[in-house]
Length: 110
Image 1 (cartoon, one colour):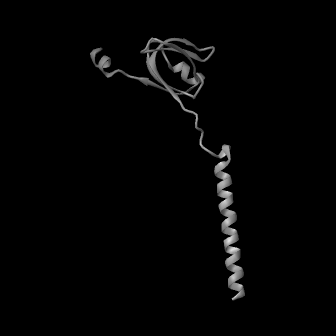
Image 2 (cartoon, helix red, strand yellow; image 1 turned 60 degrees about the vertical axis):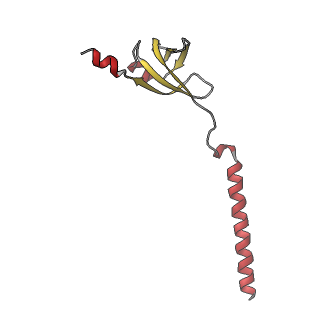
Image 3 (cartoon, one colour; image 1 turned 180 degrees about the horizontal axis):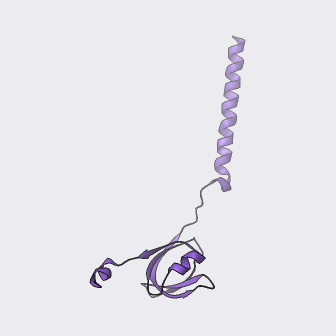
């Protein structure tokens, strides 16, 4: 009977300690997912600066935004292309750039 009581107390102690470690891990800010929101810009490229790795995009609202782009990506872009840019939250650094192909214009060029 004493062995069962000792085993039960040890088991409850270990469960309590593991629960505390899970709570501590959840409260650690480095372990949580980043809560920085991204910004999405859609517009036409009006200028490209390959030396600075920057593009200037004119949005549909008429705003001009300067965006820092990866050096490999900036070489593949062209002026007057329409793009959808995902920016890191609170910055002008592009995380992802997608070229928008307007199928209506593409089919009329034939």
